[in-house]
Every structure is written in C-alpha cells, then in structure tokens.
Length: 229
Image (cartoon, rainbow, N blue to C red; front, side, top):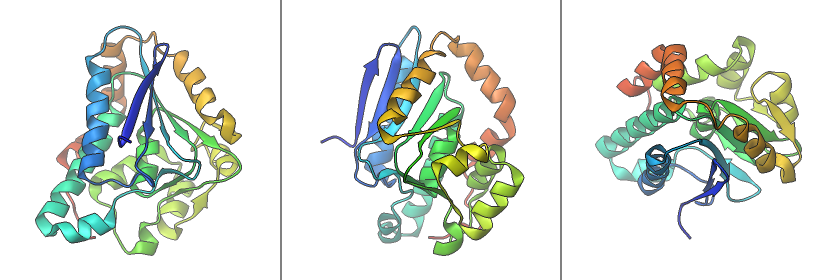
C-alpha cells in the first residue's frame, strides 16, 4: 500500500493518507508533496479534500522517533521541510477541505488548520497541540500558523494546556466548520469542496497570499527557533 492515495470524485481530488498514524517522515512528506504536484499540474475545475485512511487517525504529527534517530542536522532540516509543506498547503491555489476522521495531533493538527475549511468527526477523535506535554516548543512557522487560525482563547488553551478538542467543541469554538458522524465526514467534505471547484486558481491563490502573507512568509523562512526534538 502506498503512503498516499489520490483519486478524483468529479472535480474534487481526494487525498487519503495511508501511513498508519500518518506521522511525518521523509518518504511520507515526499508522497504528500507529489500528490500536490499532481493536482497543481491538472487543469480545469478542482478542489482538494484530505483525510486519514483509518477510523482512528487523521495525522499524529511528526515522527519523533525518526527525527531523534536521524541526527541533529538531518532532523532539523526535515522539520523545516514540514513547515514549508504547511505553507504550501495553506497557500494552495485550489480550495482545500480537511476531512478530520480521527486524531489530529501536533503537526497533524497544523496540517488540518492549514486547509481552508474543516469537517470533523463528532463522536471520537481530537484536535490537539500537545507540544506542552512532550516538551517541544513551537517553531516560529508553526506558531504563526496556529495563531492565524485559532481564536485567542482557544489558542491559549490548546497551546498552553494541551487541551484536546473534539468535533462538537471544535465547531462551537470556530475551529471546524462542521462536526458530523464518521460516515459523513468525507462525503460532507467532498460536497463542500465541490461547491468551490469553479474558483479561478490564479485568483484563489492570490487571495490566499494576500490574506495570509505574514504567516506564509514565516513558514517559508522555516526557522526552527527554540524547537528541539
């Protein structure tokens, strides 16, 4: 099984992450970027939905075991690559919807937040920025991303307490747009994305760069700051 499956439902590209907990390590990140390359190379109406391949996980964040064994320079370079990927996704020139079917922790939560819209499972699974509990400060690009997406009280709770936010709570707090039953997560995300496929790519990308330019610049710089793993 490949790490990422990319299929089309009409004009909507559905990217399913199939790497277990979908933790970020180099081959998985390469597969994600190659999927984005495929979508960017396409023409005509399009939108993107991403989801996890199991009922339990959307993405559990960085593969800290791999990073810890890779050596300081290689691990640091990879974390910078992840931030550039998050910036690429945030600025992606077609509409994007995260179909959060399970846990989205740390960089996995950041990936979900980098999308334009979010549909989350209502009964199980959490969005969580658990860096406080695993003793890892946020790199500047990561901090900029979550600050740009989360309301201030929610940002404080998630970053400073490691709060775990379920689907209904996430909808009430304005983190996700819809909280639905598991069976409806991907269909609802695809239906939402399908309403936006006719948006002009050049204009859509330019509008995102205008809205999120400061955050995108910090993600592109990919500085580690105080980040250590």
